[in-house]
Length: 235
Ligand code: IPE
Ligand code: MG
Image (cartoon, rainbow, N blue to C red):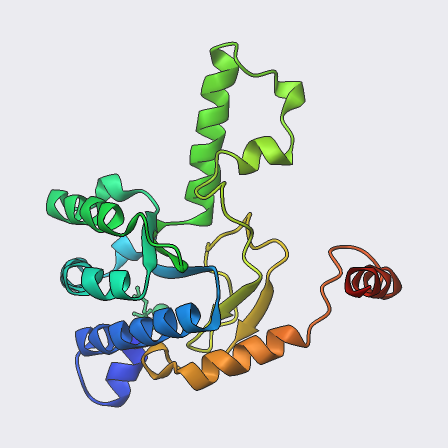
């Protein structure tokens, strides 16, 4: 979700007005995902590097996170959405941590859509905490280093129980991953758009999904193999 600051600047408004406007787009994309039958939606709300922003902006983002959580719990339940926060929440203010825990608990039985909010998250952070967990198990004599494979690593990352993302959307015109889901997005299809996050709409989401549906995903194979597999599946 990128481009809130520029959206506000274009309107001669302070950056926080852009962040507030961005919350509306979150609502749109969450409700649209639930409606379309998407199973998991992961939003990058605050990166491990965003602490480098001016103090005032960081504080505002924390407040906005709090008020969005407070204000949206009921709506999430109405839409049968289960909320989960990934990232190092221990760095957040106590009251925010508490609120996150409450929102997760209040929505934990919802089934329609899993909404993951990445907060104080970074792909490198995730891989580093995974390495730490594995090293601990090796040191404790519970794990043989020679038996570590991709599944062992994936199992200690942030969401081992969910599939890898199929589609990765970045708004705001930059064409980079910025440390999001580095491991899990290895085979994600990437959709970049110049549209700024507060202007993200159900229509643009639909365009991204239509674009995704036209891609051929080969996972290292050649086109003919993929065609044979899909013909097999269809038969
Ligand atoms: C939203 O957009 C990102 C966050 C919520 C941290 P930005 O705040 O990065 O907006 P730009 O890139 O300055 O326009
Ligand atoms: Mg930005």
